[in-house]
Image (tube, rainbow, N blue to C red; front, side):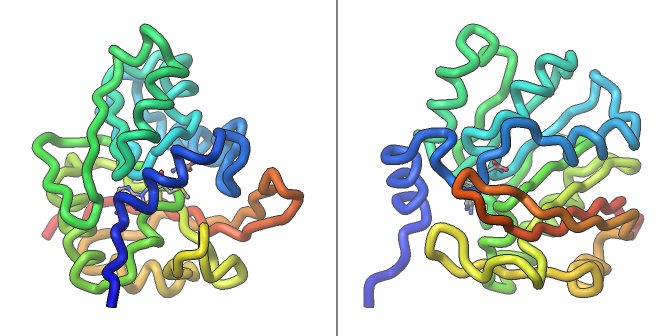
Length: 208
Ligand SMILES: C[S@@+](CC[C@H](N)C(=O)[O-])C[C@H]1O[C@@H](n2cnc3c(N)ncnc32)[C@H](O)[C@@H]1O
């Protein structure tokens, strides 16, 4: 049986599709920016966008004056495209090509952002590794914002199965390491005139 090569899969997507041709495209990451504002994340905060791909979040953060941004993705092509778009501003960002399932952070973060990457992890060992990594690298009052497909959302993304979450199931899965602050659902309008129901949840690190 052929094993699924996660990296090749995502490289192929970014090599063959333009920014606005993917279902997850959003011109403005409104909810993520609103959550950052609600929590008064200062421009000096260390921020990581895991599975950030070619998303415009980094552009918005730079415009707002954030100084310590890291974008991590499994796809080199996604990062290359984001860098190309940003031009000289790309130098202000740390770019990491890594698999979130095995990523070992080497620095502390005040704000950990993940929209539609975590839900691709379906293996319990990989989920556990990811949650431990977030917990270990978040600063004591750090915020973890994660957005996944909800139980009313799609069961697959780009043809591969994802793990859907509800407020209850994500709170229970994360409870060893994090306390829930709030969750909200959101119908994301795709460029193909369909809606995808997401759940955005914010968590605070538990002091273990
Ligand atoms: C659905 S897209 C979302 C992109 C971006 N977060 C956004 O909101 O526009 C999923 C992204 O996660 C990345 N990804 C998927 N699995 C990953 C993994 N195990 N580690 C790191 N990145 C991953 C993909 O390359 C892709 O850029």
